[in-house]
Image (cartoon, rainbow, N blue to C red; front, side):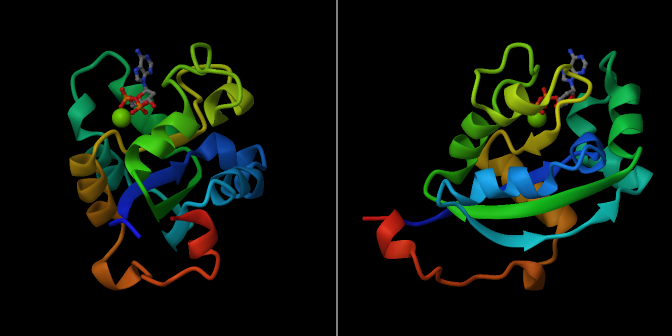
Length: 152
Ligand code: DAT
Ligand code: MG
């Protein structure tokens, strides 16, 4: 089996408030990606600012931080073959109005400022974001029993 990649995925406050936690996790699970860490938390302001540091100064930055700290979020780490790109495809385009049907953002969202879910955009950001939300000991490495039926 190939070397697995890890990606950081987070359900945003709208996904939590609208009751889509279970459905969205199910959609990720059934792709064969493996959940190796999760938390349920109200994101502190400083963590939100660090998470979205690349967007400082952009016109939507303040609203983005307000949105992500407006209610509980559910940060997760998922592992699998080509996990970063695969998850981005499953999430869909940033703006739900441009996202392909069948993607999470298209199926659950209407607006870019309420786009349901976050996913790392590269291996480098995945590493940075995972370290921001989880310590090494919180990442649970294990072999899933169906692995030979998911991977060659
Ligand atoms: P993504 O979340 O797809 O990686 P991003 O990193 O460019 O997108 O932006 C982070 C979040 O900021 C995004 O999920 C929604 C919000 N956002 C991005 N571009 C925006 C814009 N032009 N107007 C309003 N919100 C925006
Ligand atoms: Mg991004």
